[in-house]
Every structure is written in C-alpha cells, then in structure tokens.
Length: 355
Image (cartoon, rainbow, N blue to C red; front, top):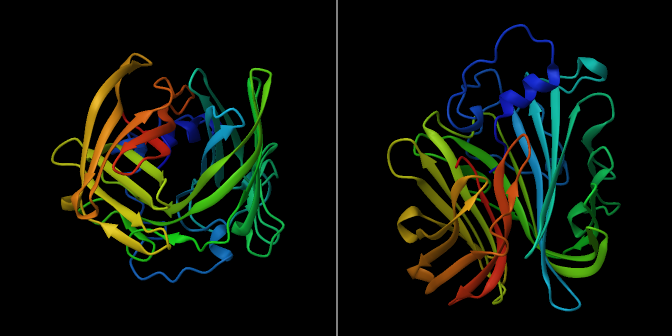
C-alpha cells in the first residue's frame, strides 16, 4: 500500500485553484468515492507484459521496488524506488498540458547509521514522467526502472540520485511473478474495497550505491510490488502496516494490516513457498503484535514486531535496521529495511503510514 495526502499533492501541482480542496475521507483520501473510475472486481485475467504498464480508467497505481543489500564487508543497506500515477479524471492519457495525470516519485537509501529520502513530482503528458512498454521503462526525471528484455521482469535496471545518495542496480529473476490475494484481486476491507496486485519477490539485485560520498558494491534480494485501484480504502481506514519478507529458507511472506478508526484492523497476507506456490493467509491465521516503539519525527512508531503464523510453525521478531527511517517528504511515512530472527531468519522491508 502507498501514498499519503494524494489530494493535497494534486492541489499543489495544479496550482492556481480557487476552490479549497474537499475534505478527504479515510487515509490519504483513498476512501473517497470514485464512481466515475473503473472499479476493481474479482475475476480479472491478467495479461503480461501489458499489465506492467499504466491502466487508464483507474484512479491510482504504483511501481514499487525495495532491496535488502549487503556490501563485501557484510554491512546492511536498504534501497527503495517508487513511482506513483494519480489520475485527476478517468479516461485515456492526454498529451501536453491537457494531461489529467499527476506523477510522484520517491527514492530512499538506508544503512544502520543514516537514512536519506528524496521526491520528485511531475504533470503527465509532457515527457517528464511516465511508463511505456516495448521496451519497458518507468521514469520520473532521471530516475529509471527499465528493461530491454522481451520479458521485462527477467532483467531490470534501477537508478535514482539525489544530493546525498545515488544507486544503480541490476535486478534479475527467472521465476514467475506472484498474483496476490484471489488471483490478483487483493481485498483491503470487509466492505470489499480492493486493488489489483501482483509482486515479483524473487529478484536478485547487484550494483553500486553511494551514501554521503562513499561508494559501496552491493548485492541481495529485491521485491517489486504493482498495484492499481480506484478506491482501495474505506472512509474509516486510517493507515497501514505492510511487510515484505525474504526468508533464508527460500520462502517469502507478504502481510498488511489496515488500521481503522473503529473496529479491528483488516489483516491478510500471502505465504510464498520456496518453489513459488502461494497460499493466501487469513486474519485468524496471523498474530501481528508491536513489541517496541521509538520516537521518530516526534511520534511513537512501532519499530519492532512479532509475527506468529502457527499453521506454518512460524514465530519471528522483525526489527528495523534503522529506527529513524522516516520519509521526511511532503508525503511523510516510515519505510525501511528490517532484520528477521526466530524460527525463520531473514530480511525484508516494513512500511507504516498514518501514525
């Protein structure tokens, strides 16, 4: 799950609007009704490589990559790259300044000692940002997620730079992608809000990164998430906690908890076996418990968790590599790499919004 205060960012980018922005409903306004946009319904048949591209008619989508990396001395790092597409109105993408699309980019790099984050904004239709197929490329300014391969997810190039950091990574995988939820229909509430959602959790990354002038040669596992929707949340949902976990056993786990103003959170996930077989995890199968908090950006954040999945004999502790991994952008949230100990050691990423 991604994006905070989308309506505010749209207002900033459009500029010159005389009317105040309408009050948002639910987290980031993603609980606002979206009757004029295409609904998310069960039974969609995914088509690749077409579904790697943008989806006209839907209000919001993202291309999101995280990587857990080590250098040759065994030091840990995390990298994030995200491109968001937000449609002001439904319909085919327009060229020029008549475009109804706003693009946002987030990039970050994290070590045990430092965390740097950067952002980019663009109006669609003028070439500053976008997504194309054959060859595949998603970009905003000089940040790139691109491939020359017929199957884009077999070999990707990922890059971003800012004043304090830059990275260039090669991502490869020969494994099939994973359709999350019910064959790609990923429900977000008991009321039926949902997204279309697939992942490539089997990427291996290698390349270089630079932090504060120091260059490192790195490698490690990476994870791609792709989602699109028109109204993914209810008006009652206040934020989420999202985990993507690479286990040393070769298994992978995705979990998210959608918090609400009233009532219990909506909790679900996916167990991905080492051979790629997937199993949807129901709320009653999962116990997700914050264990420790840290004061980050003036607010208490749950930076250490326990996760229990008894059916899988799975009991782990998830702890932030850097507890101060706050994305101090116009769209603020916490996101960073985590270390996993317990029955299934490993590494992964955690995102927390709405705190």
